[in-house]
Amino acid sequence: MRAETVNRAPRKTADSTMKIHLETAAGLNVVRHYGPGRVTVNAVDYRASLIVLPDRLVGDWPPQAFIDLRREHFEIVAVLKPELVVFGTGTRLRFPDPALTVPLIEAGIGLEVMDTAAACRTYNILVSEGRNVAGALLMIEG
Picture 1 (tube, helix red, strand yellow):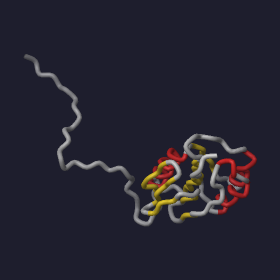
Picture 2 (tube, rainbow, N blue to C red; picture 1 turned 135 degrees about the vertical axis):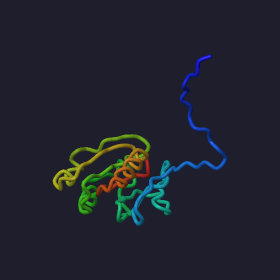
Picture 3 (cartoon, rainbow, N blue to C red; picture 1 turned 180 degrees about the horizontal axis):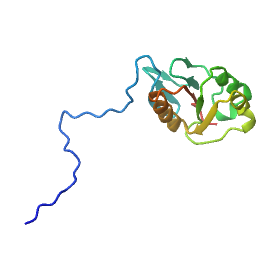
Picture 4 (cartoon, rainbow, N blue to C red; picture 1 turned 120 degrees about the vertical axis):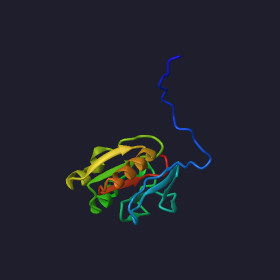
């Protein structure tokens, strides 16, 4: 009989644990949970659109739904001076009219557009890399 090498996943024991969040430096804003119409940053639940940055949070970003977007909403984001904005458009991906994002372009700020769940995940990864990122997250469909 010949011995064969078999690759198997490690056996789980009753005391094994799984991390479901990023380890980051204390004091940074991290998205801990997200779902339709709700995002948890650190230990606080938000049910309205918000802008989250590693060191601050704007919890009352005016556009509540995609159809509410105006140029001035992106001006608010530009004033915060992130190097990149991860824009979450709700449960589905939708691209804003380029005319609305001119304030970001003029400020030399990058923009990535994705659904809000993907934006939350991407924001966390970029924060863990020490990037100056803003997550601009819409909560309501429409």
